[in-house]
Image (cartoon, rainbow, N blue to C red):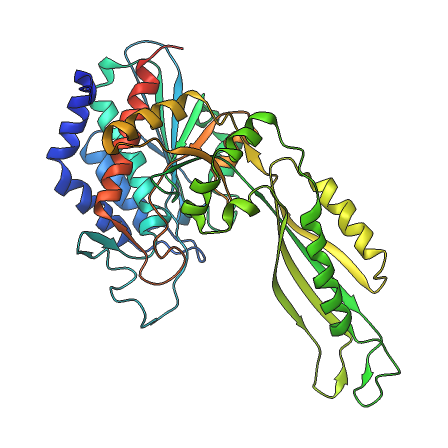
Length: 420
Ligand SMILES: [Zn+2]
């Protein structure tokens, strides 16, 4: 294997020397509880601030809500050039109190058997640590590259909140840049260049209701709801009008998508899916249910628009005059060039580090990277495997953590040191 250039070798040597410091930072970051909801991330922000101050790195807090501040900093290279932005979130999913299934406490950050345990380890304090360390290592050799590097650590991602990356987009234009790199959980084998768009819709079924012994006197809202829910499955027949390069990338990535997101994932990436997450209604067992509320999480693939889905739902609703629809939340699907420059850098560096090239894919779940793609800025996600994500015993293997740190540091250097 070809030897790395001297700057890159120096970066790798620095990471090697600092291994203990890196694991210590990551573990204590996990041990700083930042569950959202409620969304108070002060302990996580303080941990980052202590590091940036100790290393004399420039940063400022952007805190429309002081309980959930965002950390933003920029360093400049030796000459004008491209602008790379790093992004990660500080907030994490909540945990169930006293959940005995956790073998290591959710806020322990325990380092054991080559793993770091705790809520947020993979989603996404490993990736956010990679962003912070990329900022640190690139700053140390800033005379060796061109352009700008901006770090953004946000506090309001898990609940689609308005105080995090969305706030930065609207109020801090320096976070836009020419390219975004993010370490949300993915897998070593895939680079995410796009993601499906969530469309949350509530349906209310209303009937007259009545006594359960007299079912001939009123329609039953629960029965109508069950037929309607089954009919929603037809949304998966909507044909996606996908750009050629995205279709080509997905065709080449079937095995990788199944491997990264579970068997069967590849088939769902280009389709509309419907998850009915909440059904509630009815008052008593011997009454005819008169009101039922259904909440559906519809996911749009690249090439399917909000209007296409609403039109299809409209056709179904023609058969159900008892049902009213209300839109709760929508983010369009997002994508960028599957074969962009950052993809090449990540592929080359991972090939050097691990001996394989990760494949560009579209993910089922969502990240803040979409916000940059909406602004036509290419945005890529490369992070650790989602071990225990959103469940108990969430963890990251230390080898995978270092792999993400090395891949981000080297690829950021390549992006900022090579002209295009
Ligand atoms: Zn996340």
